[in-house]
Image (cartoon, rainbow, N blue to C red):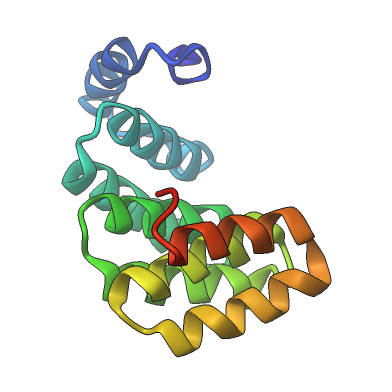
Length: 144
């Protein structure tokens, strides 16, 4: 089940698909869906990743990483409003965590909410100047 750690996403999806036929036990259900989401996202299969992450969140609603990852999958699907919602939840659970705050700023900007993106930039300046600069470059169209 560690294919996704080696970025062998296709093999991971195949292995998880086989495992899914034997329904994961209650103790492994969260990790199963979480890892399945990572594998699908690695293949760029965002709808499937979103479904897997949502199943993981149903098991562990306060897992910040799953909210962050489903936000990234929504972002990859260009579903920016849903990305903002998921990333906002990740930052509520784990405030001031730079990767989550930066992703939220990017999602706000992509949604067209420059004011909210600027608020994220202000927050990032107090947390990590490099992340704040990265968000500015995105907002200035110099990077993605």
